[in-house]
Length: 393
Ligand code: GDP
Ligand code: MN
Image (cartoon, rainbow, N blue to C red; front, side, top):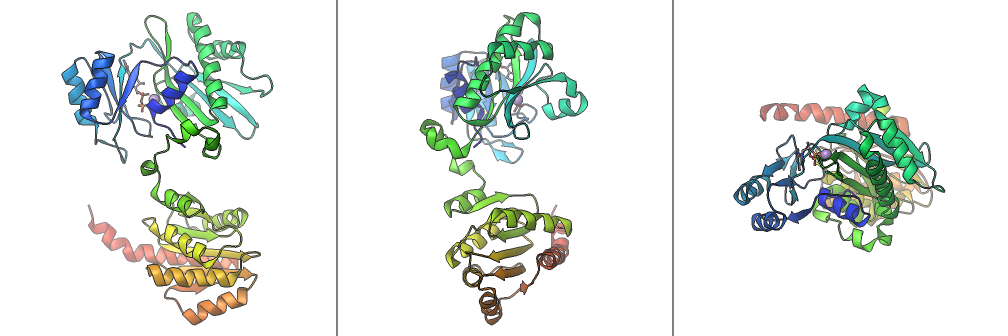
């Protein structure tokens, strides 16, 4: 679960990570009240779960109360790379001498948390990593030893931060690591970490991702969940108890079992298609669950074709067929389906589908054949809809 900047900063404050004084606001009057409480100059910052807000005009400095009001008016409702701003953070303005970058992530290949620090902050760290990888100091944390103050100082030295701020930068890293561990985050990123003219070190931005599976241990963090900001398909799937991950393509995928779904994604890619999602209907799915899964897949815009890849074990292929028939009765899909049923009750399943003769449903007997078929059907749908796409501006 991604947090908004101000929520991340609230977690930071809990762990003694220095942050500028600030207040969230949802309306213009609330923003003005916040500016009054904080004093001017202040910064009005759009709260959206995406970076690059500064460049997009979502961060503005106000030197007076009326300017704060004006900025709040402008930024609320603004579109930042597809996200609408509905919350603001009004924060005391900071003077900046240096901008650093700091983060804590979980490095799965090393099976350890990784703390990173760079003096090249305030820009996209991916660009720094690509052009100048040595500019990022890195340290894997031994979970038994933890992240000690000397680790922080070592990283600060390696990154080449100004000598007089080695200690405060090092201790901020230790507090960020504490935040990461105690709040069960999967990402804590500060870009920029700033040095002020008074040589204070502060987190000017906060990007925190919490482990959603651990939220039950953190009821106060669980309250930060904002269903309206979540991806509509992922929310719909979660409500139906399905494991669904949105991907970039236009071929809907349904399988039973994570391994089968993942190999289905690979096969579709190899056949030249792009999967729109990962959807694991799970073991033993009943017709109702299958129909619900079809509903989730089709609710994504842009779907050109759907592939069902079922290997029946505890899942019975006849139940899957019934689910598909139910989904067709309810939703009347307009895109082709390719269905491969193998395993428990596959013959009954195929028979049910043949009897129902659903429009646009193609049976395939192998995974490879099914992948090739769905890619071809999607391509046909795509080229059929192309002229229309060409007409729109
Ligand atoms: P992002 O663009 O979404 O990553 O938002 P940030 O919070 O990182 O802000 C972007 C940039 O705006 C920072 O790198 C700073 O250069 C600038 N900025 C943000 N807040 C302040 C502030 O209080 N004072 C000054 N001088 N610059 C700021
Ligand atoms: Mn930033």
